[in-house]
Structure formats: structure tokens, C-alpha cells
Length: 269
Image (cartoon, rainbow, N blue to C red):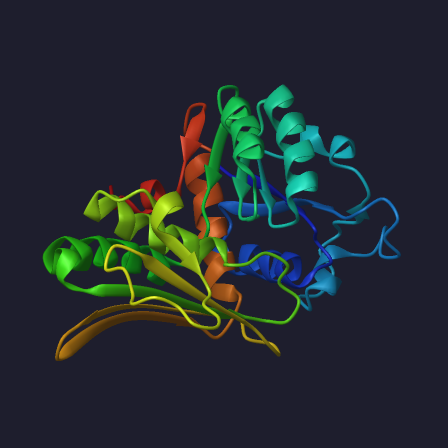
């Protein structure tokens, strides 16, 4: 069965990479719609040509409503407001949705949870297979090293990323906190400045860099007296995220309504 996929934010960096990833994925996955903002100057452009893959006959449109009947799954890597609006449309039409957008508030996450009661949604802070393997390794390291280490999360992204820390960094911190039975909201420290007291062993620190064209670097350090363990993932291309999201779309097409993540897609739970 062919899975018909729609891409929103199709003319952006991630959108174009997603279009390329679908083109490379084989006949079972098909680009069926490309969506941009209504005011985009690229409305009507050929989506394949935008992605550098040659003409595919899919014209960029300015509204999800125009093409909702043509797709089985929507992939959305945009901004929270747009993603939430798209989630309502997908839920109303029972179209599955892959969400790579980050930076949601608790209230906004509740709206996604509600939409997932009507359609299948796969939401993840990172769709890279490697990052999701790192989540498993972090859980193992935290459980073994326990309370005998200081834990710090470092992340770096390109200068255009608007949320900080990254959703992936927060997910990494959450994995560690859950493994150690800590409440991340209470133990997270986001940056340090000036004179500080001695480090509280239970805290989990976060450091953020925004610079240049860094695709995405993440390192979690477990530091003890005399040794430290570091688990690192470095992305050199958005294609690692795009391939994972497209894989998730093919998997999600066959699932019932509910909220899933990339760990479900990869069978890591």
C-alpha cells in the first residue's frame, strides 16, 4: 500500500530535505502535497524542482485544507502555532501526522494529546535513528552510574534555531532524570553566570550554543572523580532527521489513533 505524504513548510531547509528523502525512499512512499504559507512567493512552484530532484508535478499550495483529501500522513517541521493549527485539521479528517516541531508549552502539548485521540500522531524531539539509540544508551548510563556523577547536557545548533535548549537536549535530560527518579523541572539548571555555590550533585545542567550552520550537536557528560563518560551525537546533514521522519510516516499510516514517538517506530520500547 502506497503512503501518500504531505510536507508543510515545503520550501524551507527541512521541507526540501524531506521532499528529497521521500524521493529516495522508494515506491511505497509518495509525495502527494507540498504546502507553504499563503503569502509565500513560491506558491505554484514545482516541489521536486525546489528540492533539486527535478520536476515531479506537485505544485506548492498555500493551505493544508486544499490537499487534505489527497494525503494519508502530514509531516510538519514548522513552528508551534502552525503545527497546532495543522493538527486540528488532521484530527478532523483522520489524517495521520508526524510532528518534528519543538518548543511547545505544556498547554500546547495538551492540544496535541487531544488531537491524538482522533488520529495517529508521531511526535519526537529528534527523528534521527542515531539520536534515538543515544536515548537508550543514556538511560543505561544513568542507571549504572547513578548518583555518583555530575550530569551536564551540551547542545549546539545553527544561528536560525529559535528555541533553546533544543528539544533533543531536553529529551536527553528527561531520559536521565527519569532513570534517576528526579523531577527535571526541579533539577534543571539552564546556564551559569557569576559566583555560584558548589554544584549540587542532583542538578542536570544545560549549555546552549547557536552559531553558523551547525546542524545539531549533542553531548551528555557523566563526570565522576577521576573519570567521565560522554555520549555524543553529531549530525552533519538534515537528511538524518528527514529519513527518520519519512520512515515514521510510512509506519504511522498503519497505526490506530494515539500518540507515538520515534522509539515506537524503531521498536526500542
